Image 1: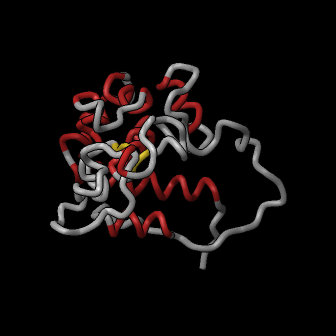
Image 2 (image 1 turned 120 degrees about the vertical axis):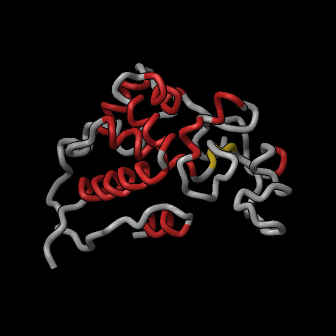
Length: 193
């Protein structure tokens, strides 16, 4: 519920949710590593890594992988949390988009909270389709573009969706909402109310 509400409050789509679950007696076979989120710098080829990680969810294909990757339009990476960037928390680790003088929300005089880290987009508090411009390729000093991000623009299976979402925020929102809901369904078995 928190993830769906956060996306919506940040300007993204409304994600229909079904609440409740049936408890499991054991872990499913698919829950062996890597499960959950992909590595920023995978040991194997980035496209194969993304397909392996997301392939453990029922019915996740290239469309869902690209749509869910678009969630990087929000947030930042920190050295202390993932180790995937050299930017730490605080002003010393900030970029021009994550420093205390810059407001990612676009509201003059509004604080972003803690400075530091590195974002994928300049407006990292707004859920939109700006991730699909891959600003980190053009401004690597200030924005991130990991191998698992850039492969979305070049891989033959991912590229049609990447281009579609870059051109249409509405298409991105529709596919993101469906994909987000599908990931939650893969974690829980819902029952009718």
